[in-house]
Image (cartoon, rainbow, N blue to C red):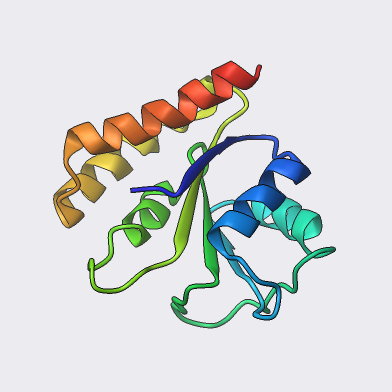
Length: 143
């Protein structure tokens, strides 16, 4: 469901490695998306020294050089997770879960968003729980 898990605050080297792994080659600009404006700005600053960042496009542009940073503590996390659920015949954007610095920071709306995501996309609850749990466990290991 996701292509990686990192913890907030982002670490430049960790983010660079993820970008290199998920979107190799520097010829094509990288399209970044996040449900958190602060996270998007932070990631852009960290990446722009080694990789061209495409200007934000109107509408939903999905190509192999698109990276979605889904901050689990920000509203709209379910949209970013839903983007990972694409037809097996086509590769959608790379999706990286960003666990909050403090797991208690996850907003109350998160549970409702995840229920709606399960109902809309058919993501098995066990898979969703495993992904979110992995993100939170990764954060705890880094602290």
